[in-house]
Amino acid sequence: MMRPPLRLVVILGALSAFGPLSVDFYLPALPQLTSDLDASASAGQLTLTACVLGLAFGQLAIGPLSDRFGRRPPLIAGLALYCAASLACAAAPSIWVFTGLRLVQGLSGAAGIVVARSIVRDIASGAAAARLFSILMLVVGVVPVVAPLAGGGLLRLTSWRGLFVILAAVDAVILGATALWLRETLPVGRRRRRSDGAAGFGFRELLDDRRFVAYATVLGLAFAAMFCYIAGSSFVLQDLYGISPQLYGAVFALNAFGIIVCSLGNRRLVARVGPERMLEAGVLAGAAAGGTLLAVALAGGIGLAGILPCLFVIVATMGVVIPNSTALALADYPHAAGAASALLGASQFAIGAAAAPLVGLGGRGTAVPMALAIALFGAGAVAALGVARRAAGAPRAEPVPSTATEGVS
Image (cartoon, rainbow, N blue to C red; front, top):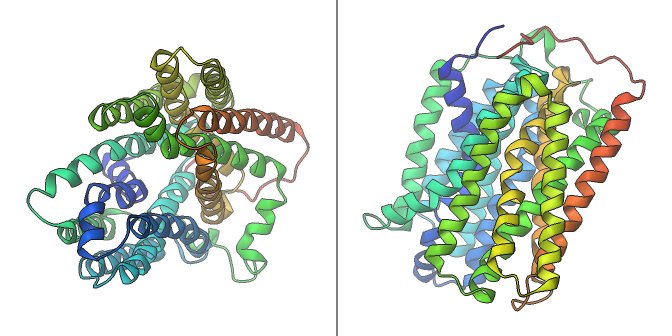
């Protein structure tokens, strides 16, 4: 079995970073940005929403295109557009122009996310794919920690406009590396013809597959639990428990480090244990932590000693849940990896974005809404996993055979 070249792994990791980098890098500059553009704080938050929506819906467009035209053309076009959109963001004259450009930035940045997943499925399957997805999860765990710190540090040297010039420069480096060193991984003979994708770009086939839908639901619900943590933890930990913004940043970084640890552990264990059992362990651990968090919040009096360990487990288990649920969902679709990756990514972002407002329904004076939402999504992920296991044992049509290399260790 062949090991993927380090250069390929580095490029795929860089492509996977577009989501968290686009969202987190400029967060320290939001106050300066809104002041310069004479905008409200809510208008500044809308620029985040626009980018996340772009990242979600961009995958739905780019994934099927990569199944039809190959991985490189949509990827290179997306990277080039991202560079242009970043430079335009740096020159934006108003918050509304900036928000529109952030949407374009998200739409184009989605190319890196969806094509990176598709390439992994082109060259590997099963436990080997789960191992590669674990490596990409390391990037997803590290970037949310490093990006705001780097953005804040660079603000000492430049303005928020300079941050977007830097984003454009980083994208240009990734674009150059992709153009020079990333080979096409989808041969012409395996590409979907126009007639193949006419019915919803192949999405109908995916939505009719109970196994795919179940694993996508597992991923979406587990991700929603983490989104609830992201949306609610700053209010719970700072307003309710009185920790400082600096200590909150340290807690956020520690939890993100948990993703890294679990991703490394998954990479070492998945070949022996299998992606199904690893996914089951991750989902059950996250659901148990969510249930415990709810009990602690309802009981009161336990404080941070009960809250923080639960939050750590809930976030850290994503390093197991995301790579294995992704590998299992894509396993039967070497012939439509782009569309399948797109639907996975879009549902992940959409469910998470819809879940985030739920944590604010009870106001800032209690941790119960956040804990309840996390517990419910964790329980839902367990139920979806049960559906996936039953669907995996049911008779099904044989997938289109793949000619890709099916063993990466």
